Length: 228
Image (tube, one colour):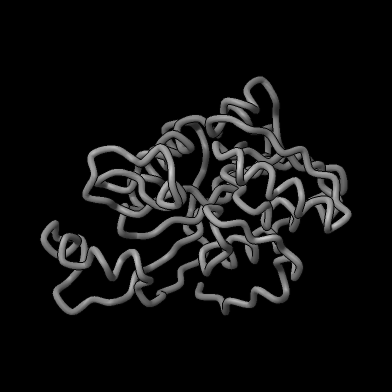
């Protein structure tokens, strides 16, 4: 199912935007829409992985969820904390590496907008703005870690919501999630024009066979995975 992108209906209008922290874009809007449509009881425990500005965490908090947000960047952590305060919402924002800060806890819903853009460099960057999108030559350096570890943090009947590009492979995501006992499915698709990053490396993507010679759009997908 293809859905219209309507950020004004889902994301907070007042967001502090700090240099070096990922600014909400179409992938954020798609995931925010999926999150807004997800059945969520008041007081449900929600984990937002790679929170950035905290936009998705605030969508969940406004629905009465108890939200924990995580980011590896201290700048993002501080930005998300300020945005939560500006919105008058309680969000626990933790600094740390992906799933590690939430180890031992259980959640009703996990949302993630991880780095997923294939990059020429053999390893993802450790600093700078590209940390938010570059994810190794196949784009799966962070995505695979979420797929492998999310089930352990979900309660029975819990749900994982992920957004990613089809450039880094949708089938591998579904297969990895199934191996952990989750039941995944693609619930939304949206084709969008290349942004500056993909445009700048289009020749490399063509060389690797990831895009067609005349291709200038990528497909974003929302993956929803249930734990029985």
